[in-house]
Image (tube, rainbow over all chains, first blue to last red; front, side):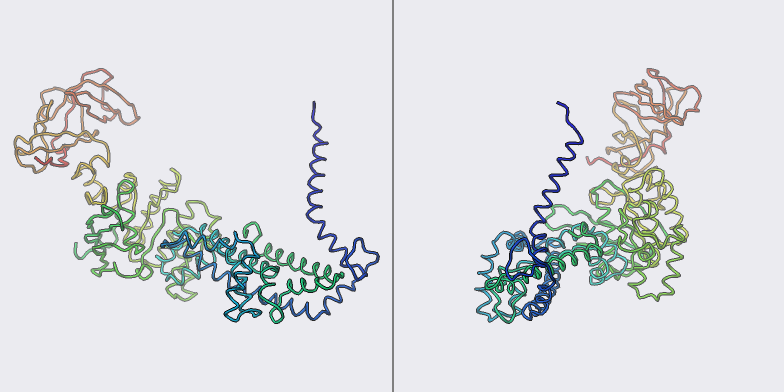
Length: 264
Length: 355
């Protein structure tokens, strides 16, 4: 039997198209629903308007939770990158007893289900009086984001030839100067990638946040969850589209800055 | 020796957990402006010495004196050394000019002076006009030059080079060999370079320090090292040679088993057992077998190498290597019986065997 190359190509392209459609379908549906004028979620919409978007931007709860999430995400990103940098330096550049144990501990949050982590973190920070507070939610998010920043920064750091740092030392740079002028610039891709991932995880995270925050420090995902408990209208779809656009925006900025392939 | 520019005094480095020291009581010194090669097989401790001088690792004991002052406890970044690394280790996120300027910035040299000195350094290494290039845009040889400029621009006490030519291809290596020598001579900087390549060491250095297994074997000019090796290791590591063991019958005369007696130059007590060495190119064709210091044997193997002919001659049960110039008249052929002679001063005493 002779194979038809044209037919094979067509079948292959169709398969790829279907796969992409499957992956993107929920987003496409949400995008379309967000313009629906009815007060419940249904597909397909009957008529279109920007009404839901207007409502989202007038919803004080959403807007204030959005700003809180943004601030929390930014703090988590910065702290997770700083902590990740220090941890990576000690793990890559130094040998000490119990290094394997530390390595495992840092990666442990990858292995434990978030719901289990959530209960654990809640039990730890409740006695400290940190429930429903910025420090509480930041700490909780650091626990799940630091493994990622350690990962990305460690990868960048391992690619740095230590002889480059030695060359800087010999030619007159103190260890502090070597860090700021040589090591840090060379691991920049890992820092940016880690920071962005940490921010996005914090910004998106719902499971753990639901256990930690209620009113004062509620994040956007927890507000969405609570909103969905009582009402299902296209506002949620509109808000989802806004969040998707923000994520896409962040990714595009990173792509512009360092190139995603280099960062991840 | 005490007033030399650089004095390495009984330097020892034993790594934690190691049984034997990597560097074992090594001492040598350099006058100002000299270029010294640290030569030895890999793992002999030569790079460890270089890194101790730079300050990248701390010696277990011993001193490194510059102008009489021990610097071994001064931090690496305050020692004012220049170092060219084996793979150059240029800063990949900076331009060539920024790389060269780095040491000056660390020394808080003003911008105008910095720019002037970087320009001069670029001229010195023939990279004029390439200051704005990225490091990745330079060829291997150009990176080498940039690394040298980065080290020299700070006017270091001492220039250290770690296997400076090993990353270059053969043609570039010859060119850079002359170039480095020329730059060193023009700047007058005192320099130490590490190499495992004897040709490189012999052709570039004013003096050589030959090392083996952490110990210094011999320090001397290229001619002293090649013509008067003091140990069997130096004799066999640098150049080829045939070795003999013999009993000293009278001063300067040793009886070698299976051969006649050999006259040699060097002090050895009568009755002791000595190791002697003859370089292949010191053997010459002789007319008669009666001469002192002559060997008669059968040519077992011949390799024609253009300017010279390398012969392996079976003589009294041992194999003798001889290099004859190809213009030396009638050349022997395989199976011929030949007589070779050597002058007493070309029979080198390379060691005594403990009785």
